[in-house]
Each structure stands twice: as structure tokens, then as C-alpha cells.
Image (cartoon, rainbow, N blue to C red):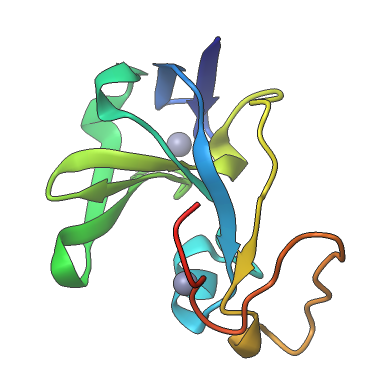
Length: 134
Ligand SMILES: [Zn+2]
Ligand SMILES: [Zn+2]
């Protein structure tokens, strides 16, 4: 199944021929800032199956600790993907078009969530990191 995504202004587009994995939401204070939202909404991809279609030259990177970073549009500011050591590592679910056939499977760092956020029930929640990968 082909999945596509794009930024808010539409300049940067990508496509992905695979499945999104380990979709999760992290509620830590860092992810709230990075995603300008109540939490992250992020899924892992296989970099071999990912391809920029347009606007790659408009990507700007912010590299944090340990070689992990985010790439965003320098025109509209949408954060499109995470990178690890320069390779696309996952995508932000907010920029995915349509139904990528994945649901957030867990919520992590709910112990540091924003006071104003109400997390939906029925999905595993962890006060800090999850005990294992899934
Ligand atoms: Zn844009
Ligand atoms: Zn986080």
C-alpha cells in the first residue's frame, strides 16, 4: 500500500511503499514542543521504502542529542519526519494523507503530560517509557 504525506503548504511531498510501524504518542515536555501539540504522533518506517517526491530542498533539520533529529518545511513549518544519523527514521502522523491504516498503539510519558490534556481510554498508557518495544 502506498502512503503519501505532505506539509501544510504542500511544497514538500513524500511517498512510502510499506507499512507504518509502532505508531505511538509521547506526552513528554520535549515532544510537546517538538510537535507543537499535546503529544507526538509518530510511526516508524523502513527508509528503503521512503522517497521524497518534491520540495526536498525546502527541508530544514533540527538535530538534537544522540543524532536524532526532525525535518520540517522552511516555508510553513510542518514537521514531516524524524531522522537518525541523517536517515529518515519515521514520519509524523499529522502530515500523512488519508488513512494510513494504523492507530496509535500506546501512549508513553503520560506522567508528564500537559495538565490540559485528556488522553483517550482503551489504549495502553505508560507513566514513563514503555517497558518493551512492540
Ligand atoms: Zn510547507
Ligand atoms: Zn517524548
